[in-house]
Length: 363
Ligand code: UDP
Image (cartoon, rainbow, N blue to C red; front, side):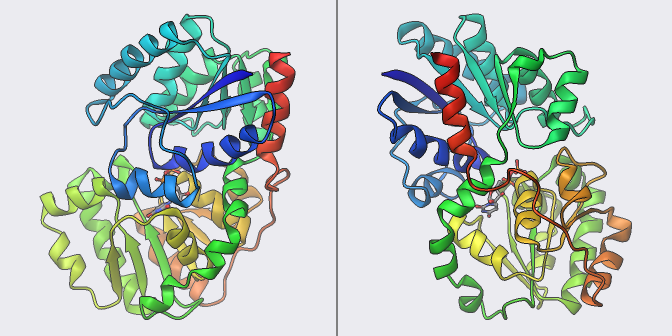
């Protein structure tokens, strides 16, 4: 049996390891081991995803908790190196672009353990984003780079990565969605919230560039107020965003908006059930840009750039600034809806392709 470590740290990671865990588990040659670094550790941001995706409790828990970027990166490297030295796996798989992705890669590669990155090659070309630094470090070091779209391959080759390391496998987030589609469709959270299908917006915001600066966040709150006068919205609020809203004193004003429902962060199935029936998404999330493109739902991304350009060139995603967000919402409400198509290999078969790639590599 080949032992494969799947590294998961934070909300966007759990849904990426789930399809791969289940696909590896079905083989007769691989033993997938879930390593939770503990970057996100509360129920809403972590445990609920293990339940939704029917994952076992993590086999290994590093318990690093929160901290500065360097503290988290350093703690993961120290704790994970010890595990790797005591019980080295045959391969380490890291996903996405969080601090633990880069930290686990550094620890494993230095010990000569084959390391693969799922969701490789994405670039926003914005080094003020901590995720961009993690992507650059991880892709420079990993032995196998699985990309979701052709731009990923192009970015890696341009950076001088050997072509034989790069393999396009498609988007694992679509596997996650398809894996739970029937349970998502069975859930009707919008009704419980008193909303009508196709007549509400769904908001998620958590990027430091939008929520850490008082003036920017105040402007965004004002715009949300204006939007909800025309379109009722639901806002499952990320802990970072809530904390800043409270610190800056904006929470009470937001809670008083009649057209806005503020919720705690949701687990995957109820969140996706809200996505399925929404009129449009307003977000700065990477994953939500992909999910909306796959489902053909208009998505307004409050960011100056995206590391997922196919969602704009092929999908329903549109980049916005605080200055033009409201006009773009109105344009969608007036019928100016961007149509799109599903990018190639976003087909729910990515985990299968990754399993085949691991098998080839290890034999
Ligand atoms: N998500 C969720 N509940 C929420 C908000 C998001 O389940 O309340 C899911 C959604 O599927 C999204 C994924 O979490 O694609 C990752 O989102 P997040 O915005 O945390 O991370 P990013 O993709 O920006 O790294």
